[in-house]
Image (cartoon, rainbow, N blue to C red):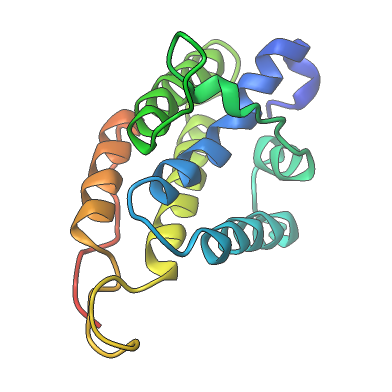
Length: 167
């Protein structure tokens, strides 16, 4: 059982940031709905906090709050980060977090971490419909969101469960 105490402050910061960034990459995939998507991310954290079956590593992760600096996603030269910057840098951050975990956590905990990251992203993608008129029709998960989920799944090494169906 891996706990927060087994990481130094820098390592824990990197692990802590991963799930948040997974959700953020989906927020950046499609315009609109940012507030609702952010609320959904918070709900996933709260639900996981209440899950007695969650591994200790995940319980400690959701009990803490990541510190996110917007400049982390900005390109060199101080320009403002674009959604593409957020997605690209987000995948780097996730790979880095997984690298930290590889040296400290057991395979089951790493798998739980990956699933948690993907769950946040899937819930964000499903939070708002795309297309349609006045909420009628449209897709629960847009093509852009599905592409982002597929890319995230590839980074994490697991397949997303969300399909790009219509509502």
